[in-house]
Amino acid sequence: MFTSTRNKNVEISASQAIKQGISKDGGLFIPTEFAKLSKGDLKTLCKKDYSGRAAFILKYLLDDFTEEEINHCVVNAYTKDKFGENPAPVKKLSENSFVLELWHGPTCAFKDMALQILPYFTTVSLKKTGEQKTVLILVATSGDTGKAALEGFRDVEGTKILVFYPTDGVSNIQKLQMTTQEGENVSVCGIFGNFDDAQNGVKKIFTDKEIAKQINDKNHMFSSANSINWGRLAPQTVYYFSAYCDMVNNNEIAMGDKINIAVPTGNFGNILAAYYAKKMGLPVNKLICASNRNNVLSDFIEKGIYDKNRSFYTTVSPSMDILISSNLERLLFDLLEGDDKELVNLMTSLKEEGKYQISKEIYEKLSHNFYGGFCDDKSTKETIKETFESFGYVIDTHTAVAVKVYNDYISKTGDKTKTVIASTASPFKFCEAVLEGLTGEKENGEGKEFLLLEKLSEKGKITPPEALYSLKDKKVRFSDACKKDEMAEAVLKML
Ligand SMILES: *Cc1c(COP(=O)(O)O)cnc(C)c1O
Image: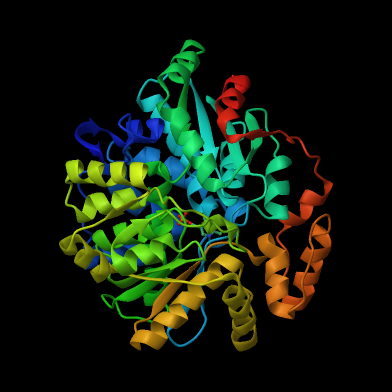
């Protein structure tokens, strides 16, 4: 069963949680219990391919889905056509560090790992709950979620999707990916503001009673494809198990050995999935949380104080330009052992004062599991250069943040535990900054996106993904932008 982080009296099934996205009290849905896999289970897992591993793990995270339903979702999502031979390959970087490439899906970012399967979860959930209404998926994006959600939900029966993105907060390629999106049920709208404005606007629309009535009258209901939706997090736990199995199978570790996991973090979704994998029995030592210059999370892990009263920076790793990390609420609920009253206090304090402090006891639990660090744009670019020079391997700006914070962690602790670094995007999504890192020359990509793809291909000796290259011939379909207080109108217009 699932409950709400802000009200433990809520009791719903996985299919309801996925359909609804967020609880009416503003809380997030979480399972009331996590299964713990045994060593034997892990051994079984290691013998399977990615889809087999996904089906095995997901049955523990989607209580009311039948095995058949889960298989249907998995088999249709992780096809060779969309992800190639292996959706989440592990590449060895150095003796102790490994990169988990999560960007082999159709939109070249890790969001595909969840957003290709979420639409299948959604249609199964609609059927299971006897829903007759059309689901309107609202998305706030810092760049990658928007495209991945559009691609996942395009022309999926019973759904429509509307994406809001900050007009000046995404890369040129990201913007093109979204504004050229095909499909009959899709729409895209820019916001004059940053990601937090977009996310707050969407959250407000979700809980607005007047809008709820209007869309209900038109036989629609809202849902979310952001990582506040459980259907996003569940599939993300799978690839951490899968990486572990690959390392066992390649004799890099022995079954039962602990690994570290380093994750470039924004909304705290991807790293939370790693924490849940640990809770489910994956042998994990430290979770290394890497922030960019918007270092609200690494500060929190260091000091136990979450404080969003600070400047917001637009960085070269835009998918992490966030000051309100929604999924941290789920971690807090877990560390508080389900004390929903205390959690509501913290969230109220965040809303009213922009900050909160956790108790010493909770802080100790947090530091036991997590290490936090951050990296500015200059070090991000330097890390891209160093990684290429040392290993002949090109990383994107987000992955570079994680590599840098991991290197700092090693310098500080001398920890020799083998570490999986989540690589969250193809470097071709962020050509300008990656090239600047590699060559030291400033690039202006406006209007020259495809030239830069070629340049990076040459310099890095890598092939640009066809999905990005083919944007060249696509027509821009969406050029609307609105103020942050006009988002509701954009929603009503789409009805
Ligand atoms: C979304 C995103 C992140 C941050 O992931 P969270 O789950 O929000 O922490 C990091 N890197 C890339 C490339 C992303 O698209």
